Length: 380
Image (cartoon, rainbow, N blue to C red):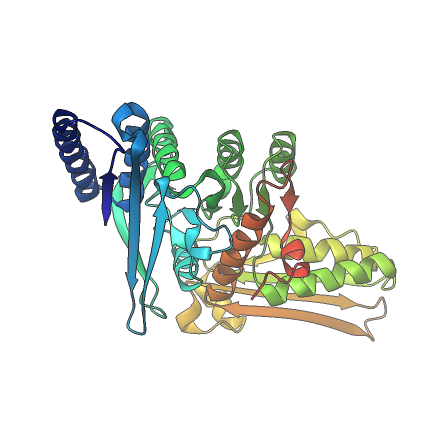
């Protein structure tokens, strides 16, 4: 429910009647906005009307959001546009998941709902995709949310910025964050957009110019989590390998490295996880492995099946095998991490959003990795 309650301490009968008429018109405008949009944007409208009409200075906007699930019913109340929402409450966060209706972005949006986060009512989609509204539903909790997808072209970005202002008024600026699972070609442009609009973000999209990505974000003092992999166990493995390479460089000197990775055929770039792991293995082995040329990338169903991928996971998997072989081929070490589906990445992404929310407002912006999230205990 959304309503404006006015109770001036003293006023004449004529003033009371004027206030009552204005209040009725005010609530009519808000309710009309709610019918065409949603609670968050209506709340933002209420905040702007508060500022526009002097008679509302003695008034209080009351927003009550009721969430009903099969197991329980909860009711929360926010006052004065919701800017005082408790930052420690995951439901107070509004997450703009960009890249839907793509499968990874959609999985991340579902994971946000599953972990108690709330979705932004608008999000960016591909520049050539028609505007539309999708319903995101988490099958585990039964929670759902409607999200309007806006093409990331010039006009669409202006619409996103306008909507973002209303959402921030309703939820509080520091409670609005973004997730990016778009396309490698969009990575750098999107990162600049987030940074210049002071929107903390989790970058799950791989590819693009990674050096430029880091430079752009750091130079603009933005808050972000940027990582090639969001899976908890894989992040832990990466951290262990980095530590091993730091403590025992060249321990596998002379060993030759071979890497094979398989992903769904829609993945346009080389595995970012493979690149990160290879960096550590190269330090351990002193091999001159060329990441751009020497990785064997499998992107067709026949090759993926032969590599061990289940048929029902062909549209969503990440299989990696790294092999270190001694010069005389008498010793061989093999490291594998195989994932079918997207759940492990999606839930790690949602955890990264919760972690980042605790950092926003703590001074100048900073770029964090998923290892930072893991070290903080933020991966559930």
